[in-house]
Amino acid sequence: MKKMLLMAVAFLMTTAMNAQNDEKGFSYAAEVGLGSELELGVRAQYNFNKYFALDLPVLKYARDYGTNPFNEITIQAGVRGFSPTFGPDLKAFAALDMGYGNMFKNGGTSSFAIDFTMGFYVWEGLYVGYGYGGMRHHSDHLVRVGYSFTY
Image (cartoon, rainbow, N blue to C red; front, side, top):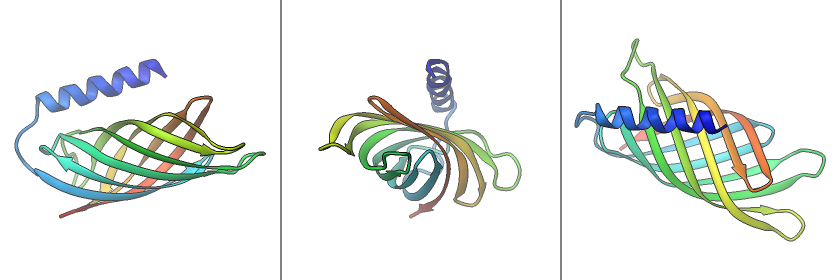
């Protein structure tokens, strides 16, 4: 896990250093994650250029459907990096968000929350990727599908 996070940070830093001043401004996204839980999320994103953005804020609701089901709500902020476009609409991305979450189980547990996503934009704003979300003593692996709206 540490190696994956270090690779994501290195990717984000190198794309930020190579960035140009295109595609600046706000965009918004909605996504669904399916894996060890069902997750619904929305975010506002400020694009500094076509390679680097800030996620401000990221709001997520998740329903863990294991043997002892419970609900989670998180609010986070983070960074997002993009590769150059290859093919008509294809580009890679990686995102790292951190913040605060609450698991509604046995009276509720609040703690630090971290979220890592990497994947591909496959058509206009449509993206698909792998996601890892974790809170203290709990983590989830997901396939995430979302759509980014640019305004």
